[in-house]
Image (cartoon, rainbow, N blue to C red; front, side, top):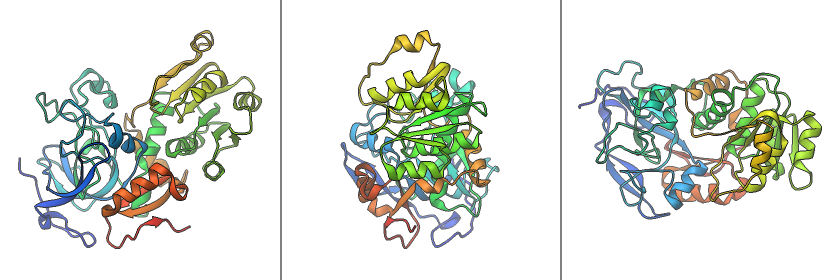
Length: 390
């Protein structure tokens, strides 16, 4: 289908009828093999728009995809050597509209969530599109219409991408590009605590692991009225950011008995524990620090099987659930909180690099160079790369 192209001008790069026929995009060859090439400009279909990508944040899952392939799934298999462009935490400007789209206008600044789902399976019909039964069954022998940008369809390490209108949220004028890329991360924390966890104001929350999701889980929990909010971490610089985002208490796992300290602070244990580390030690800490009838959210992807105290989980009627992505429009609520200034997500953004410097940006994110937390790749002109100004 031909897309409806409107003409406008935003900044110094093309919008509307000025769109080029090709774009720059990084594609994945074998494991850890990224190449910057020219790809054909994608065309939005019905209920889709073309987004000019202005900034994209690097997620730990991007690093997993580059190394191991999973959880990306292209044409029913691993994403390697399939002309696939990764990257999923991006924002940008609407550049073109697909047929029948009037929910957005060319020139709108938007940020995106990852999953659109197929819209027709049992889970999608329930609103659980991050658990779509047709995950990965697109652009192959079985075209089910599933879309999860940067996982099953082309993502944001490029100049342009196509997004379903259901995945997009308008960005306030006052919000920076870099902060707008963090809505997905905050939305993931929101989804785990509210839709899946049912957090009620006044209940206690412990977050294990001060990575981007963990730090924003602290912020979201505090904004939702959790009390107390406790952060468990080992890096003092990150623990300090956790304090700024609302942690009432910070436990240094290197020098304290984490479980004993949580019980001391909460009485009978925590109502909610969000494990963002995903290792055997932290999973068992989560089980033993949660009070009877409490909930544990597993927000990390362990690289191997872990053993944990299932008996304690069962006898104490503790609920254990995993989280995938930022479903049920949690990103919209996260954006509302961020726009209202309920927390400053930009505190976790530490570095910005240009698109052509993606390999360096990935190295900073993977090796935590210069204490990198959230590294952003920008398509805006004049980016020199490095740590953001304090």
